[in-house]
Image (cartoon, rainbow, N blue to C red; front, side, top):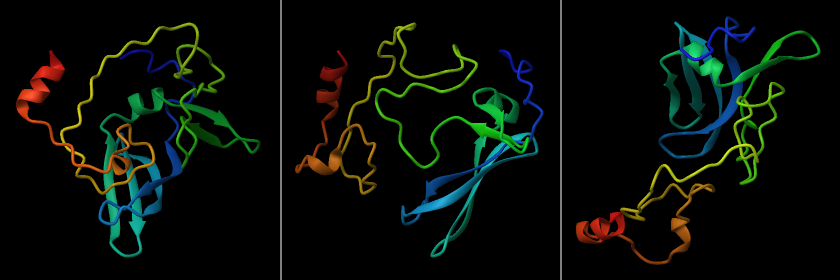
Length: 155
């Protein structure tokens, strides 16, 4: 599959700390992403709602291939992909030292086109995510298009 064996770090166990949210109260909490049984898992703990464990990827090898690893000053492997706990700005440029095609992000070497259309079916949401493309909490009115309206938008 792809170049899965090209990475010198592909056999290193994956582990990194990150931030997530409690699926019950949506409060930000610490999380750990780790490899176990050739899969990638996330575990997190909310003081109010307890422990959660979620499958991130059914293939640890593929997941690691989509990331990259560097060694820190002590020789420990550190897995990288994004800025843990922060959202990326619209002009995010990857910082993978291997360059293209591992440096996913906006660049002058590639052309991007719309490959996914998103249609708001409702703005009845209480997530209040800071990265929401619809910015639903700011609309001030209910959006729930009929099937006919959705059909018209798709045509």
